[in-house]
Length: 89
Image 1 (tube, rainbow, N blue to C red):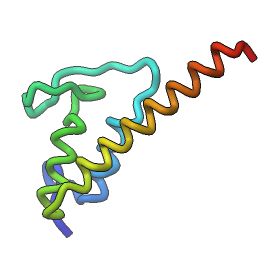
Image 2 (image 1 turned 90 degrees about the vertical axis):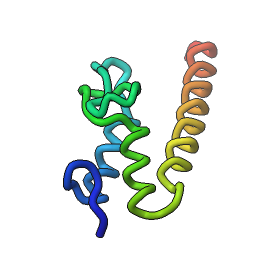
Image 3 (image 1 turned 180 degrees about the horizontal axis):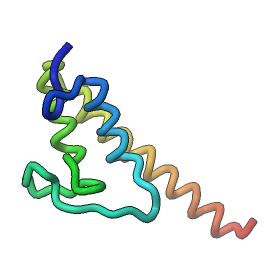
Image 4 (image 1 turned 60 degrees about the horizontal axis):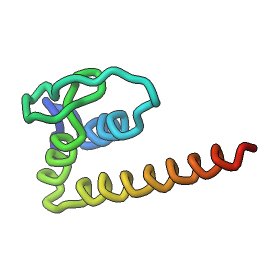
């Protein structure tokens, strides 16, 4: 079992990644605490840094691929929501 953020397990790091990715419509964000230039919900560690930690521990790019696919799904969700709103029912 590899370590994630500041001694967190990989499971805890993944849970933090999900917290960053699944933002409610209104939330507070601030600079990533690692000062990478990214932004994070609650001014914690950003999704990019968390994905990098997971991928480094696993030796691949699974977390980066997950973020990419997650963003694609969110865009499809927003498009469907827009279509529903435009329909008016």
